[in-house]
Length: 317
Image 1 (cartoon, rainbow, N blue to C red):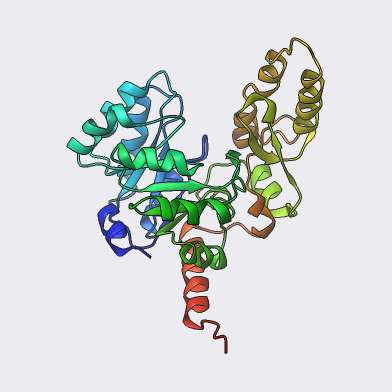
Image 2: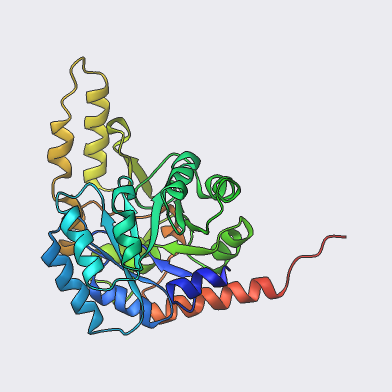
């Protein structure tokens, strides 16, 4: 574990909550931060004043550090950047682009900038642009993914950069944490495990689907669009993959058919619990998640498992 990174961020444990759309709300972020990890808010495609509102709401629930994930493709990204600087946020993670043009503004505001990357080349670019650390997300993760696994991506990025690396994707227990640290990571980011936290607003049917999931119950959609997404299988994914196959064979593919299928699907899953029409974004690690717990219980269990493992190293003769 990288103590300087923990001190810079201001957290007790090397555990970061993934900024999952519709799920990374004040109640979850505050609970993770209060438990010693780093809670994250998802700005998504929301305007600046909405982001200010959820930041201020979170401040009422915790006096611990928490961060904001800034989606760089958002039409409101400029005002969101201004808001996080004005509100004294100490940590920002970024996705869907490069934070380079905002780096000076972030640094002037004393913000630790941590981009999410899915390749060595992008990790090197982020380091050159001034990133303080990097989140390496493997394709085992839920939601939008890259092409490399966590096991292969993390050590290659660790060897390629000189800033702390945070491992994400396929981590849900102390064994995953220990493996990530052995690969050279300084901290871990978890998403799917926190979806089922008591403090998560995810619909009970969403939580139930994760808890009952088997190892083979996720599927990747959107490969032909260049923006693959890992989700739990249901009627929506079956129809989506069917349309993808049809489009692939078309001379003039109509991607609007896919856009229509996916419209509002994540909200249907998180808020409405629509088992057929919702997009239940989840990592492959769902098969290891067996119960709903508080964020405090999740983090303490992770740390206990990790310490137990590392206290008794394997010795080879």
